Each structure stands twice: as structure tokens, then as C-alpha cells.
Length: 485
Image (cartoon, rainbow, N blue to C red):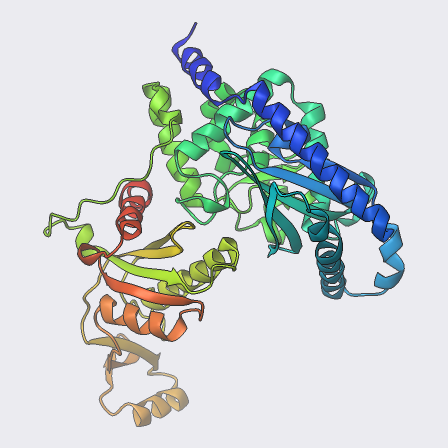
């Protein structure tokens, strides 16, 4: 047996769920369905189907000890359509959110009466859904109960879904019907690899988003085996995996695909790139790790280990000298972590845009890279920056109009008495507002920080206050910076 296959077999034996785990999930789902169906009859609420989705549902691609359950409840869109007639897409989504909110509040949450279903509550992603915790003895399982519009597949393919989750049941059916058991095991291996390398899902430590379960399933669908995925992984950015057989040039002409690093088109919806949220950073790091595995196969590449805290003892380290931290804590723990993540990514991107260039587009602090690292359990969110030129001159040369354009040249001269001419243009030496990245960073964060956060620390890397901060430095210096020139 080849070395790869021996490692895959050993890892698979560790990560495949036991029959007891599968039976427990089925028992919980049956209990949930009975409670929800009984309440629906009491309230005279109609639905089309109730079925478990996701990896623990009809796909059966889950990992051992991964118990999260996604229970989906279909609603007949035809019964809602008269109220939504002639609404714009945005207004229709708002009305759908109201309907889901009402049903979650008055149907789903009141149905969860058994004592093992604890802390039922609303959460918001793209639309409201119910989350509840199943607790018996030492077992704790997170359950999401999601309402969706049960729409015919051909209508979704022609017109798209009403809400994002309307596709999800069709995703489950596609994977159930198109992957054989060996391929589902390869999905497990691939998911385990992405998790072990901190590049999985919306909690990815490397990049804003990592490889999700559905993207892993589609990679196996398109390539057949994990061996094939690994052998071809470095070519993914130059390839298009498209159920509809369009080439990469055709897909790159579609506006909303143009900035996506990878293209893995959803078989259920030709206008959706499943890989759109996969960060270039996550891809590059995983590509590096796959190359290392292929050169020297070791099971450690599939074994999850916590990110280590950076060693900040060497004050002369030239990289650490250019690393800066913004250590934050959220004031509100009822806001979904993806909302916090998106707010802080937006803040980080603004800092990069404003830090790299002056408002005149002259260079400022040089190349800046950042990453967001967060730990949901502690409510700590860390934005860590690499700044190529953290100390710059107090002034910079600002370019004016060509000398030959007399009208604009005269206006420039009147506003800037200390102008000078060079290479046919007018110039002026302009005083900077900030000439250290540290002061710029503190000022920007204090003026733009979202209200639901407070600052624990803004400093150079050596003065990190939290373990999360020291882990964030490791992510940036070891998992991101080496792959960006």
C-alpha cells in the first residue's frame, strides 16, 4: 500500500463517526421533528418537509465528534407569493426575513419544550434562524433550525433562489446522489486537512474565509479522489470547475466572479461561485502545506494543533519590528461572530487603503498586510498588521499639474507658495499628518472602531497583551507573510 494511502487510512479510522454517534443524531432529529410537527398542527402552520441537511444530514460527510445538526424546514413559496408580488428583490428579502422571524418566534422556539433542548434563541446571518443546545449528561450538541422556501430546482437554476438557504437542500441531495461512499470518506479527509491547517469555514484563522464543507465535497466530485485534488491543487487558480462546462475566460467576464481567487461553480446555481468566500491567503497556505505533504507524507498534516503563541523575546527580529496589533474585546456577545468578523475586516481593509497611500495617492507607509484572528469563547478579536515602512519622513513631495497647463499651474502656484518645478511638473513639499504607522493606526482605530468593541491594546508586536494577540502574530508571520513577496 502506498504511503499516502496508509496515512489516509489511519486518519480516516480516527475521523469517521461511529455508529453510536450516527444513531444519537437520528434520535435527536426524530425528537425535534415530533415537537415541531405537533406545534405546527396546533398553530395550523403548513410546511412542505422537515429534513436534516449539512454533513450530519443527508450528505453523511461529517467528521467524528462533530455533532452539529442542521434541521431544515421547507415552506411552500406559492403560499407567500401573492404577498410578495411586484416587490423589488431587496423588499422581497426584507419581507421574507419578517416571515421567518415570525415563524421562529411563534412556532419553532415555543415547540422546543423538552428539557434536553436548552437555550433556544434567534440568531441572524442572512436571515433569522433558531439555534438550540441539546444537553444530556456530558453530551452537548448545537442545533440550527433553518426555514427556507421550498423551490423547484429548475426554477432556482433559471431565476435563482429567494434566500441564500433555498439552495441548501438541493446541495444536500446533489452530494447524496453523486458521491459514492469512498468519495465521502475522501471528503472527510479533505475537510480534516483544511481544519488541521486552520483554513476551514467562516472561523478560518488564515484569511477571512476558508474552505467550507460544500467546496470540499465539490472538489471531490470534480476530481474524483483526494489524491487527484492534491496533485492538481496548485493549478486551481488557473482552472474553472464548472458543472455547466464554461471555460475560465468566459467565467472571468462575469462581473461578480472577476475578483474571486478560485472558481468552483455551484451545480445548483450557475450564477454562484461556491469558492467566492475562500480567501487567497487560505488557498496559498493550504497549497504550501499540500506541497510539503506530497514531498514528505506525514499524518501530522491532518492532525489539528492549536496555533502557538509567537516568541516575542528577540527584540531585534526584523519582521516583528514591523508587526503591529490591535487587540479588541466585544461588548455585546449576542452579535453573531460573522458580523463582528466582517466589521473588523472592513476596518482592516480601510487601514490598509489609507495607510498605503496619502489622499493624493502618493506612497505612505509602503506595503501593508493584515489578518483578523478571533476566539469566540473569549470574545477577543485581534487585527494584526505587517507594515513595510513604519517610519517615514515628515513631509512628502506632492505632484501638481504640468507647467504647460498655465491655468491649472497658476492656481497651484497661488495655493502653494513653496512650489518648485521638476521634469515639466509643479511640485510642493507637503507636511504629513502622521509619519509613524503606530500613531496613524491608533488615530484611525479610535475614530473608526465599531461601537460594540473596546480596545485592550494598540501596540507593536512586542507589547502584545493577550494570548490571542500572540497567536495572531504567528498566523501573520508563519502562515501568511511567507507567501506574499
